[in-house]
Amino acid sequence: SDDIALIAVQGPKSKQVLLKLMDEELLPKKYYSFKDKVNIAGCEAMVSKTGYTGELGYEIYCKSLDAKTIWNELLEKGKDEGIVPCGLGCRDTLRLEAGMPLYGNELSDSITPLEAGLSFTVKMNKENFIGKEAILNKGESNKVRVGIKITGRGIAREDCKVFYDDKEIGQTTSGTHLPYVDYAGAMAYVDKAYSSLGTKVLIQVRKRHVEGEIVDLPFYKRDN
Image (cartoon, rainbow, N blue to C red):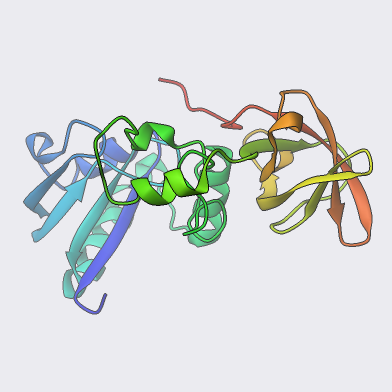
């Protein structure tokens, strides 16, 4: 926003970098936890142990006026760890490798958590919660979210049709070359009947079909 900035420090050395700017007791210990009113590089901020990369990481919420100070200190103090700036393209590739869904692609107001493979986020046995009625009204879906390893030549982006032989079975939601595993991959929603690991599929990329295979998500999972 105009008032609040977010700086994400992500990667296996993110903790080492942050400890050069703040005391260790001020770092949140558990994933998805945060600490408020933390002094970092002389500025007050909130730090959370969160991220959208599949790697160890932290996110810093600070006043927009302080963002430049914190940013410059991170780049200066993180030189020995090889810190580099990166943008949304990099983050999107990382989250895709990690099998993380993105709103507007794998998530929308018409896709239920059960379809998206996020059933752990809802407890259907609760008496009631916001959205329960909508999930029940939609009923059991025939579509599931899967990973596809592209075995042919080409890259499947979003909105590419997926086929099993001549039968259309779904559509891709995200896709790109995945640098860490060194192959092209995509996420898609396909009919449950064709979602088994190892199922050979065809993805329509422009005017041709590219071979692919249903694989487990995530494409890549960090050690530890």
